[in-house]
Amino acid sequence: MFSKTQKATDKIRLLLQNTVDCSVFLRFLSMSHKKSSKIQAIYDLCKKTLTPANSPLSSQTIQNLCSLMDTVGPGDVGLKEENVDDDRGHGLFGLSQLNRIARWAQPITYVDIFECESFTICIFCFPTSSVIPLHDHPGMTVFSKVLYGSLHVKAYDWVEPPFIQESKGSTYFPVSPCAVLDVLSPPYNEDKGRRCTYYHDYPYSTISIESKPNLNDEEVEDYAWLAKIETPDDLYMRPGMYAGPGIEI
Image (tube, helix red, strand yellow):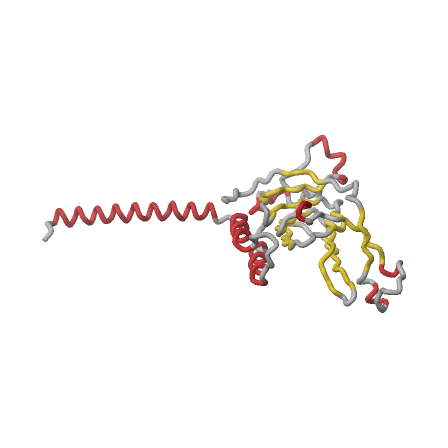
C-alpha cells in the first residue's frame, strides 16, 4: 500500500521518464531526418541493390531507383534554385567576372558525389552550347534524372545479324541550361574493361555493303554507322564542388 506522497512521487517519476523518453524519441527523429535526405536515400538504395558490381539488376531494383530519382530536385543536391535560369548552365558553379567573355564556350561542370567499386553518383551541369559526344557505357547501367532545364538525347543500339541489340552509344545536346543527376553501375574502370569509347555516326545510306539488311526509306532514318574516334579535343569538363547534403556511409 502506497501513501499519497509515494503515489505523487511515482507520478512525477513517470512523467519525467515519459519526458525523457519523448526527448530521446525527438532526438532520434531529428537524427533520422538528417539522414533521410534524398541523396542519402539514393545512396542507401544503391548500396543495398547495386552491389556487388556487375550483378544483374532486377526490374524491381530499376523501378525503385528510377522512382526515387524522379523525386529529386536541384535543391536536394545543393544547386541553388535562383541560378537555374543561368544561361551558362552551371547553377551555383557560376563563372567569375573574368570569364564572362567566353560564356558560350564554357566547359561542362562535373560534380562527383560518391564513387565506389559498384556505382557512381554524380552531377553534370551543362551550358546551352555544350555537347557530350556520342559515347558508350560498356557493361554498365546508367540512371539519369534531369534536375532542371532540358536536353536532347540521341542513343543507338548495335544491330547485328540476327538483329541482336545491345546499347552502344548516346550523346547529349542541351536545349537549355540544364543539370543531370547520374547513377552509373558499375562505374567506368579501364582495368576491368569499362573504358569510355567515343564514336562518330554516319547516315546509314552513305555506306553500301552486301550484308546490310534491306530497309525502306522510313526505316533507313533510324539506322546509322558508328565509327570509333579518339576523345574529342573540344570536350572539356571542369570539376565542381558538391554542396548538397552529406552522405553517411
